Each structure stands twice: as structure tokens, then as C-alpha cells.
Length: 108
Length: 135
Image 1 (cartoon, rainbow over the protein chains, first blue to last red):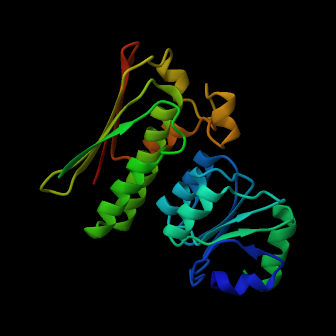
Image 2: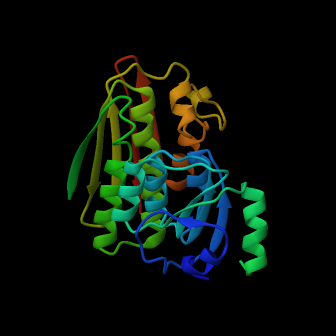
């Protein structure tokens, strides 16, 4: 499933990217080293962390995209960097558990 | 092939720049994906450690004619008091600021050891030196 297909959920895409990335896995985590250890290529990463470093982690591991959950919203610098690297950034008012239920319903 | 990057103390904005640049270089030359991921993980962890814990240092990337990659990390102190404890998964001395940004899980050194082909660390008050190889 491509990132653009999950946009039918109540998610807001906040940067200008293609969203053609293939989602192969979903991972929830806020500790960057734990995410580094367990994240795989094509992962859709759900987190409340919003600092610029999340983009570095996503880029290093070839993630499909980042979803900022529970109302977390990144700053402009983070958005710019992700756009430059063509990493989709999405925001959701829901918490990670509620969003994962929606993703499973969609077929992930 | 050899590149040296400067890493500044507590510069969280630029943290990860050396790692992402090295990854980009390796991707361009078409290196094996498994090695690429291992280098990316280990390099990022060690680079972040210089930012969080040291007074600044360098990241050195080298690749020899056989494709063996060596990453070296040298900082200027203050050193790690108890190396054995520092390598215990979950143990961290990261600052409140670092933790608020998602660092300080206490997994950095163990992540490096788990992905590198070889791992060496020495430390004194003058600085910490880490060398890893990947093949």
C-alpha cells in the first residue's frame, strides 16, 4: 500500500511530496535509538517526537513516512528538510493505538 | 576514499549530517543494502553520542580497495567513566534536553556493536575513540 492510500484516513499531509512510497511496515516509537534498532525500509513511523532529528532517522533507514500522532506538530525546519528529502510528513489528532486500528482496517 | 566531518557539542540541529552524507555517498556507489543500513545505524549513533556527551569531535569515514569500510569517532573529552556500564543496554547519562528530543535510550553503543563487523572503544578524560569496520 502506498502512502497516498492512507490519506483517506483523517490524516493531514503537511509537506509537498509525492506519497508514492510503499508502506511495508508500521512502527510506533519515540526513543530514536530503539527506532534505529528496529526500523526497516518502507516503515511508516508513528511518533510524538517532532524535532529535526526524526527526519535524519527516517532518511537513514529509508522509511516510507512519518506520522506525528496525538496532535504533535513539527516546526518549519523539520518540514523543509523532509520535503527536500521527499519524506512524507503526516499529522493525526489520534493517539498511536487508535491510528494503528485505522491502518489495520485499511488493510495494512 | 576518505572523508572527515567535524561534530559540535550539543548542536542538535546539525546532528546526523555526517551520517546522512556518508549514507548518500555509499548509496551512490551502489553498496550492498545490508552494509548500507549497518553503516547508517552505527554512524548515526556514534555521531549523536559526540553531540550529546562530548565536547566535540570528528567522524572519519574510509573505504579501502576491497570495499571494507572503517568509521572512526574521536572526541576531545570528557571521556566515559565506566566503559562497561556505558555499554549496558538501557543505561544512559544523557541530559534532560537530549532526552526531550528522543535521545538517551541507552541503546547507542549496543546498537553499534550489534551491526558492526568489528567494534573497538577506548576512553580517557582526554577523549573517547571508537573504531568500527563493516564488510
